[in-house]
Every structure is written in structure tokens, then in C-alpha cells.
Image (cartoon, rainbow, N blue to C red):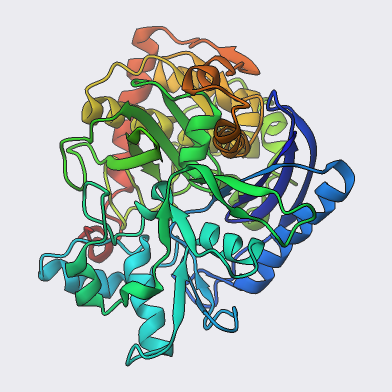
Length: 485
């Protein structure tokens, strides 16, 4: 039987039916852009968001169903609180990019509690302080996966998997349970938290859908992408170039030695949990990737659509010395400089729109190389091939620029959003559609493989110039650059 995958993204939701070879039978999607009511705030209407996902699921099932299993992939750390009896949200969902709790994180850091504003913990406390200051209401907390599953099961299941829960900031470092000291400090009632389940296995019937298929796979979006690109063995690595950029490495059953963040800026990550235990990874973060292309379209008006960036950039053979640092929201791994800002360097009177567009693509590619180098340092692994997905991965020129910047072969995912494949594999593993992780690894077949076109000397020169550009873009707002979470 086919598998339904519901993918809950930041800017869109999607429902896809996969066959038993992970081929796409049918798909529906909806745009679900968050709201930004003030600088630093990123909010969702959780009811409209889940309704869009359910509409997509019902439409694709009406055309291509029935299915026996459901997989769910979800944007991580976006925080939703709803009333248990009514099933209605009590406040707007706070998106993972929301920074309203920066001050709270700094206060907590002074007390020895290290949390980041992009985790769920302080977002949840912020919502509770507004709607339930005395913590007397019967409320539920969840990330989008929990919220969708609550709706799919008509309020009978309040769950999340460990790959999502590991991003909340509410667990002990080994992922075995909740950190009671954090719950107590933030006054988070234990009873409002979801039950944490394995990433693959029978969870509950999706009674809100025709045929009540069983929910059998759950994962955070980046972990689902890691699985979807077949990176299920230690030393395999993928990068997703979406709104932001995430590079994830599969490590195996041993947790990274660093507690919170490695020396080169990577984080420990629960890749998934199954019956055999936890598989760990590391993650490197680019705060803005596709956002830079959207900036070219929506704010600069240099191109009509993100897809037009390739043709525009190919009008010139190089950037002619123009370098762009994609730091619209600061710089993540390895710098973690929230005060850095986007910079265009090397422009002359002869610089054209095509040069700028190519420089933007090249700048994001160089940030990808930064992430790969940091992941090598923090994992101690060679990482000599890179698999990529996300909207920018469909741009052939960009994929070549990534190969040139990293100096390794780049394998492009056959699906733009490998998250769909990953959640589908997790659901299929539970039914035996795939016998085990070896089958998942063997299913990987890239759409294309791009070899680096630069000599070592040429690449070294480019990387040196890039490092100087990053230095100049850094610490533009010193008060923000001083922040560390």
C-alpha cells in the first residue's frame, strides 16, 4: 500500500503519496508564510496552518488513495499551545525564527541555564506567562508534528518523536528524559508535554482521514532530509538549502563529546530513535540561504522569481570580483555572530545585476563550505562527499558552485524536498516496506553528481578571499555580536 507523507514546512505545507519504491504518485501543497508583526517576531496562525495541511492530505488521498501508513515531517521548535478540552490554540504559534525571548535567554544564561531563542523552551514559557500566568489551565504544548497528530487523531494522541523533542531545550543532554531543573525554572507543567515516541513504529490511527491510516513515521525536517538522502551510516552528510541552510552528519549510536556546541559551532543532534536506540548526528546552521534569493526577487527586484536566478547568473562567466556575504540574519556556524550583516564587496561601475545574482549564489555556496569544514572539525570525520536538497538544489549552477566551494563531489537529491522521502522511509520501515536501514541506504539515487571544477590553488584563493569578506561583514552591530546562547 502507498504511504501518505505530510510535510510541515516554514513557508508551505505539502501532502505526498509515495509508492513502495518511494516514488511520488501524487502531491498537493499550500503556501503558509508566517506573519512578522514586529521586527524579530515570527508567528503562525496554528489553526489555519494545520487546516491547510489537512486540506492537502484529503485532496491527495481523494485522487491517489487509499494508504495504510502516514509519515510526518515537521519544522522544528515552532511552538504551539492549545486548550486540551476545546482543542483550540490559546495564542499565535511562535516560529522557530522568532527572537522575542532573546532577553530571557540572556537572563537564564547568567543563572547557568543555556537556552537559545530558536529552541522551544523559552517560547513556551513566554506563551504561558501571557495566557496562563498561574499555570492553572489544562493546556497542551507541541511543535507542528504534535499539533498535526492531535488533529489527525481527533484529540486522542498527544505525542512527538525524539528528533523533534531534542530541539526543544527541555531534555537532558543524553535525550533520555525531561530536564526537571529547566521545567521548574520556567514553570512548565509536566502534564502539558507530549509523550515522546520512536521515530518509526505504530503511533495511532489518523481517524480524521478516510480509512484511518496508521501514523507510523515522525521526524524533524532536517533529520527526515538526512534519512531521505540515504545518509543513515556514520560519516554520511547532507545539506539542505531552503529558507535557511542546515548541514547534518550521521554519527551512529555514540553521542558527540561536546555537551552543547562543538569548538567549530556544530550542535549534537538526535537523528532518530528506533527500537535499537538513538542514532546521533551533528548539525551546522546557516541562518539565511534561500532568503537571500527571495531578497533579490521581493526587495531588490533584480529577478522575477527564485527560479530565474540561474539564467540571470549564467549571463556572466564569473562575479568579476564581486563577493556577497549572506548574513541577512547574522552568521551561524562556525561564527555565531548575530551582529553580522549582509555585505556586497568588490562592486564597480561595471557591476551588473547578473554579477550580483551570481555573487549571491556563490556566497550561499561558500557558506555551505563553511558548514562542511566546521562539521569535519567537530565530528572528526572526512566527509568527502556531500548530498544536497532544498529549493536551491534545483539550481544546477548553484549546485556546481557548492562543489567548487567545498572541493568535494555534490550529489543532488532526486526530490527537491528529501524530507518527504525520509518521513516515508520511517513509516515504511514500520510495516516492512523497507526491511531495514541498509534498504534505505541502497535506495539513494542522485539526480546528478557534480565534480569540483576548480584546482586546489584556485579554490584556496577563493576561500581566502571569502574569509576576508566574512571578517568585514562581521560585528556590524556589536551589541548583537556580543550575544551568545
